Length: 208
Image (cartoon, rainbow, N blue to C red; front, top):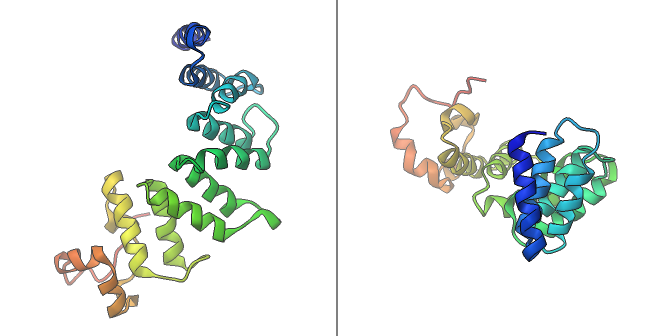
């Protein structure tokens, strides 16, 4: 075991014996989780995460959702993943709100629900979750599970770009010629920036 991780586990175990704090339980769970990245058995991390999650620790609840959703050292169980994500998401934990969007957007058969996916992406995006904003921008651009809306696509891409230091002009694939005059007016970003785009930049080009 990595010496640094071992020290984290020992320190936090002493802390839990004294005060039984969920934050210490979460740290132990995280240490075991990191230690067992390549392991087929992640039961130790699950044990400590559940202790913390039982006390309302959103981080532990979210990580349990990830473990069960990805089948990391446990039997993969989407229902249990969603259960843990929802506990944290209802307390406005943005990572869990985003993860619910991913789960509902990518699950198969009767479990797939794009309306729910968009709802959770919007809640996460409202808390400045960058990946949720990118997801919404893409959905609005393609018109998948929402009405196609280039103005909203532009604005969500811009919001995400501001925090990720990625250039909007590189990521966005919207052809300005496809946008109506009203859509340009509706886009707060475009109203601020359109005048700064040169005449030769008739569209945003992706380098991908």
